[in-house]
Length: 162
Image (cartoon, rainbow, N blue to C red; front, side, top):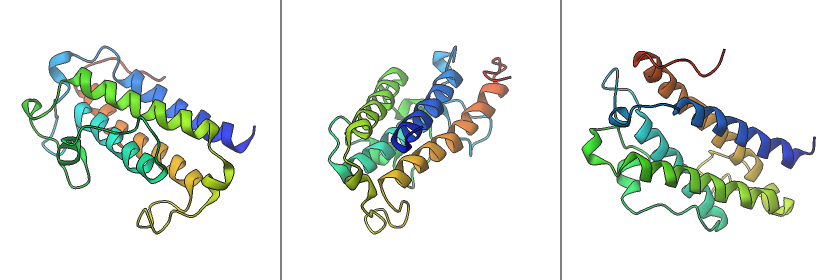
């Protein structure tokens, strides 16, 4: 498999698992926490959309923009809070899906020279280049949706894998 196809496939696979973890989620439980330190689904979706916005902004990717309020609600240093602090779960989910869709569409067409170029300084060391950034977005998503999986289990929802 070509490198680009592998990276795109990996991002899509991770997102499919994330979306499956949201299946049958009770509408009134998107801000549910088993412990006060848990990152609940609405925060995770907003945080991942904000991260897509950050990487998308480095490349000028249209469609990765989020509302200005997302920085305070979901950006670096933010912490999950009560559900009344957030836009609706459906609005956050639509943004979560839109930003990743725009990022993937760009990735499928972006010149390799752009993806190969260093972004280490621009990302404060988070990613060496565009390829690395895309793979780390997948890891980041898995990290946070692992937290959602724990809340899912705590709510008594059925597992989505195995």
